[in-house]
Length: 493
Ligand SMILES: *Cc1c(COP(=O)(O)O)cnc(C)c1O
Image (cartoon, rainbow, N blue to C red; front, side, top):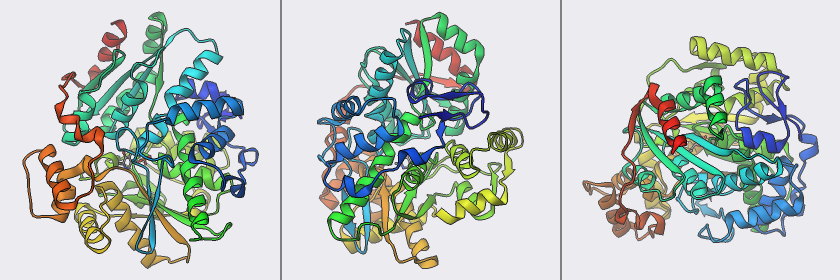
């Protein structure tokens, strides 16, 4: 499979190179165009386990690995890591379905991909005969950081450095990261918001001097953010898996379409749904759900992407994003691979903070996507209602999706079943979730966790329950302009 940079025809890569590099040298994102060769027959998946479906789907996208290699790699990646053998269970809640993506080692949906990515990188490194240490740089809005640390710690031949916005993640998310074990890990706060941290990381990747310096130090920089195609591919699998579950439970017939409602930040999760659709999954609408940072809602509804707006810190911090990286990949797909058009729009975004997408791109997008947003008040209200009505406890991100799902059903009921992607355990955001179901207001995140458990009886995932007993290892905090220095200091160690 050939992967194209979204910004120029000069930079193509096979899947191993794309996984190893993370981002193309021109700043574009590696993206496939030939979906005809990636078609999956859904009927063939019905008898398969979750792990088998993953290997099948990922293997179609990253097809430089043999079938046996991919099967072994996926089995090892997920073995004993998830709470259930079906990895991503589907629960019926009222008339709708919730696809639980948070049953992994850090209780966030990013575990699904970040359990696999380190193994893909190590396999690609070996196959390509690369000797350099692969240094993973990651900016996190909260969940990616911990899931990446968990995936990469003590993986031979790799090192990982995570930057998070100072004050921009929850107590529990911060504790998860700063207590991370492992000799090859670094965790550092950045004075700024997530976009600052992400821009800082992207600038390091694009900095020739930084890359030369890394090479001279026996290191090669790469990314675990969803700009890495190795992050995206594993996410495509659970769309197929969820669909199979609905067929097997006779909720739908094979061939019926399904709508997926996706709490969105960097546009990676929902783009995986678009990949699934292009690979043959019967998808009705992909519904993009945003919080008060509703730049994507406005974009999908008006065609104008305008990041020049107030940035809000919300109760769903993993969606507090104004520059959604993976949208670039979608623009590339929607334009049929128009490098120049995408490069032009991205230039406008970085120079002026705004662009207007061509009508043809937006027509294509609106044929398959809808969008809505819900603020904190609406999300918390949804948590309370769903708990009281159905005894189902959602986290704050999933709740944004739930609220937007109701808007979607009111506005365009297309008759298909709705699957809401649930992206985190409610216990990662105990304070806010508790405030939605009770009047209690404990002081700390951990007290809130206990109280939420006492009030609802929903079990606390073990990885979160044991967190408070671990000592913090990392207290570094740098200015935006000092990120490269931090990286250099850690590579030298
Ligand atoms: C990362 C994340 C999201 C957003 O996913 P994208 O792929 O960035 O759109 C939503 N919810 C949670 C809990 C997350 O961690």
